[in-house]
Image (cartoon, rainbow over all chains, first blue to last red; front, top):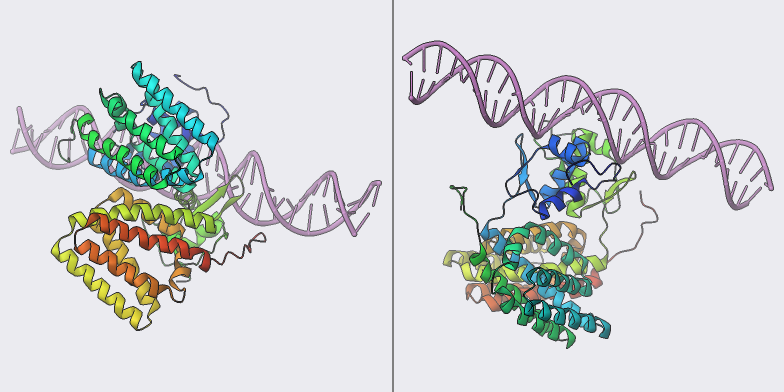
Amino acid sequence: MTGLESSTDAVPVVDAIRAAIADGEFVANQRLVEADLSERFGASRTNVRTALVQLASEGLVERVQNRGARVRAVSLAEAVEITEVRMALEGLCAAKAAERLTDDDGRRLREIGEAMRAAVASGDLLGYSELNRRLHDFVLQLAGQGTASAIIERLRGQNVRHQFQLAMHPGRPAVSLPQHMEIIEALCARDADRAEAAMRRHIRSVIDTLPEVDTTRTRRFDAL
Amino acid sequence: MTGLESSTDAVPVVDAIRAAIADGEFVANQRLVEADLSERFGASRTNVRTALVQLASEGLVERVQNRGARVRAVSLAEAVEITEVRMALEGLCAAKAAERLTDDDGRRLREIGEAMRAAVASGDLLGYSELNRRLHDFVLQLAGQGTASAIIERLRGQNVRHQFQLAMHPGRPAVSLPQHMEIIEALCARDADRAEAAMRRHIRSVIDTLPEVDTTRTRRFDAL
DNA sequence: ATCGGACACATTGTCAACAATCCTGGCGAC
DNA sequence: GTCGCCAGGATTGTTGACAATGTGTCCGAT
């Protein structure tokens, strides 16, 4: 998509920019010039401007007075902090999900689990990554915790880069697959404490792996 | 403060509105008319507008197309959800704080604890409430978790009403004081697990008390 | 060759006016 | 009396132009 395909959209500018950042079209530290975005998405500069304000309060972009906005680069330390928050919140959601689980939910969970096994066995990294997302999303949905889910979603947006690198890390599936299965088992057993513990162990291992996959060349040569 | 005292402030419109909501000057479901706020705070309507967008993405304000903004009313169920998130996150921060605590921090914690005891003994509800805020803030500061702290702060803003009612609940200090002391002791012992557990127990009791202090008369009969 | 200053350009910040939309109240038809 | 309908007013949404600020460049003096 090279140009102007959106003619009469409501207020999707913020979503469009968010998606562009998520998809890597806008890379970290890239400048976001209002006039350019305005033309790129066929929106008025005012709309782009308010979109940038909103994205700034979501932590996706940085804005400095009279100097414009750019895609915020999250350091490794920040990625760790963010994932620690996710650990606490997804743990909470796992516990809630265990309490509210229906038999049908359990079946769907096990389906995801089997699909994961198959994806890992066949070396389908992208498929496994997609299933990973589906599992975590499903847990959030089961938990029925709107507040927590919204926060987790927002934090995930800030971490797309690190998450992606993690998914492509060789040997990672062998570690995370059994953790995922343990989460599923605990949920199906409706054991809230065990589900929370399993989820926390899983995300703790993500945190421990983050430094290994970090490719922050730290080319900002002053702050690190 | 009744009127226009801010003449040449940078971009404090959003902070001013936030403060007004926190202080109860703007009550739940109250309409926030751009022109009125514009005059009230001596800012242009454009600034007010972007401020409202930002506050909406913070969850303090609700905005509907062509119908303006109003102060968001958080239901009891939402207040419970919010406080459950706080339980998870402040638990995390308590654990981190225990690991990083210095001797001097410990002394300051115990000072707060003693001041709390005195406030409760003398029936100083407002003083105790203020100390409560100071204790929780101090734990966040000790934890050094910027991401978690920012989220907690934001959630607190949404819950001001319920928090206030809780603080004024008779008999509440008798319950929360020993919990606060346990948190302080666990922190001073540098026992991360115990600190996290104590913090979670404390906030769990807050959650359990919320329904009792709830005064959602649902008097929104369309609100003005 | 390097430094300082002035000029030009690019970009953001602000404002006022205009258009679109929604709510209110009154009026007539049934 | 109730329902539908149609101005009138209030409020939000949008646009474009202009001001303010920052950035980069070129030139001359040392």
